[in-house]
Structures are given as structure tokens and as C-alpha cells.
Amino acid sequence: EVQLKESGPGLVQPSQTLSLTCTVSGFSLTDYSVHWVRQPPGKGLEWMGVMWSGGSTAYNSALKSRLSISRDTSKSQVFLKMNSLQTEDTAIYYCTRGPLFAYWGQGTLVTVSS
Amino acid sequence: DIQMTQSPSFLSASVGERVTLSCKASQNINKYLDWYQQKLGEAPKLLIYNTNNLHTGIPSRFSGSGSGTDYTLTISSLQPEDVATYFCLQRNSWLTFGSGTKLEIK
Image (cartoon, rainbow over all chains, first blue to last red; front, side, top):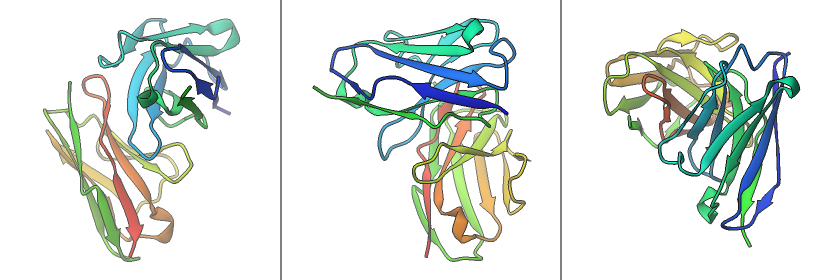
């Protein structure tokens, strides 16, 4: 069974760095891409970036300067790091398996607040 | 970057009614258009991919069509369980979601 699960801190202070982990099971990171998508409360979805199966990455141009995605294939984990967080980065952060987003994690709410 | 405009942003319709949601791209997206349903408190759920392909397990009352820059999601007979927000996603050039259509029962 394909599963994805996000984990990380629920609260981050402004200007600090967000670190999230997506732990997957039921498939290999070397066979499928994993994307990060976020959703501010009550608002729409924003594609953030992707870890391709081959190990390369791509990012939303609006976030590229602040965002980094990496992985540990031995642990079936994909990591998201985003720096210089502001209140507008408060959102539910999802990881999802590509190329079609048929499988999603449950999402993790990150609140940026002092 | 490709922009996706969904309309309407809010729709109220009766059970059994035929409902059409629209998504317009700022440039040709070559039918790389998917539709997602998101119910309150849940992750999005894939309904249709590549314009008109019904994802596994999705009821046949959902259908998609379109080409070029204009795409539609149709629900042939609205059911109470279809209350949700619907998002389109273009995958032709990187990825961009539409802003969503919130669908409720009248």
C-alpha cells in the first residue's frame, strides 16, 4: 500500500527555517517523484517543488531562493527546507507522489508566529 | 509562468443538476490538465487526468473535456457527497493549480 506521511514542527518563528520530512512506503523514491504542495488556511494549493526519481530537483520560481529539497533513499524520506519564513508561509504542507498526484500525505500544519 | 483561472469561484446547485466548472490557462497546455476534489479537512483527491481520463474508482458522473487553453469538469448529476472545492492543475510547463471552485448544494 502506498503511503506518505509528513512530519515536522507545528510552530516556527518568523525568519527561521522550516524543516519537514516526508516518509514514504509502498514504493521506491528511485521509481517515483515526490512533490511538495502547500495550502494556506482557507486558500488554494501551491506547488512548491519536486524531488525527481533520478535525484534532481526543481522548484517553484517564486520560492526557489528560499527552498531546498533533498532525500535519503535508504530511509525512504524526502526533506524540505525553507528559510526566512514569514507569516504568509503559514499553511498545511503536503507531500504527494508524482507524476499524477493520486497519493497524498495527510498534511502537516505549520504556523509561523512568534 | 502559466496562470490558471477557474470559474466560477463559488457555485450553488441542486441535487441531480448538471454542473460545469471551468479552468482557463494563460497559454496552450496541450491537455496536461488534471482535476482534484478537496473536501473539508482532507487532502486533495485526483478525479481526472490529462483532460478526460477518469481516475480509478471515480464515479462516471464526473467527466472532463477541453483543449488548448480552455477546460471543463462536468458533474452530470450532482450528489450530496460532491460538496467540495475543485481545483485544476496544469502539468504542461512545471505545475500550476487553479484557485478553486467551491461547490455547495442549494
